[in-house]
Image (cartoon, helix red, strand yellow):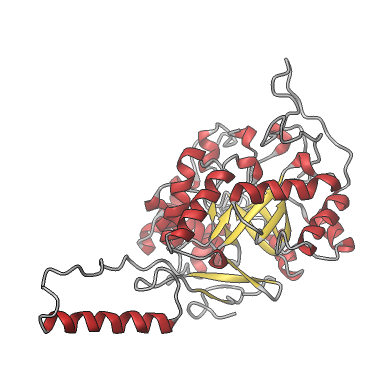
Length: 400
């Protein structure tokens, strides 16, 4: 969700256990069991079981030799991820795979491994520069029977250079082409920053500066009202190109303004939110308006430490002593404590990783919970410390 150039309500219904979440968990996103990786209905599983018994009978009667090929052992079960509702028609898994900073050459395999592990929510963007690789991973996963398109919740984002009404649909269609999909489950306006248009042939993704080859590359702003962009986003829903639309990096006052004119309200606001930037008042207000909060960078400054943008902290949240102590208390990792904290307060999260082990760790957040004392200790870590700040790298203080 952070810019490439820097690398460069929700109501929840059925709790996982008593007192686990402050909001009501809606349902569970059931993923394919180990005997049914293609997601076939129970009737097909029954047929498969009958076929297996018939094969064993043939072996026992000597009709087939003992060395006859048997089905390979079933893979381990994929994770089960709760979902939150969007409107009346869709469920968004509360843990997704963030795809920012995922290099294109490893992204296809990362997406496939994530889907095998149980991820069904994929959070991407035009600006990440890896949507063709994401699309290939989705395509191969579907072809291999690991999931269907309907199992997935695919998210992308409109980049700043495409805010003018006449450019929104073309940008969405380019994303769909790269992802090899017919529709998006969710399309967000990436930033409330309108930049001068750059056509696909000139450069794609366009990134931040209008001409990166100039002696002094700079941003060139476009005079496009946010309302114009939002109304063009609504047309994408009417045309069936996207199922839901939302916003990203918006403070409450801008969301309030959108709600005054939107005929299709935003279903989510994707914001930076972690233990050092908790944004609880914003989250509480959005919940009161039926808007889901999605948190990017939920592990705090891990990515930004690598980029030298950690506000001088010198360490990430994973090395915080309070987090480390709670991880030891619950026999979990520091990352799981950070992620569980956000989920437990009703926030959807999209942690990024391309490593299968960490993907599995990041989704293993259910069946246990932080107690009230734990949550109090973690709340005390808030420093209002923002890492993704366009005021610093783009000269645009949208959070001022």
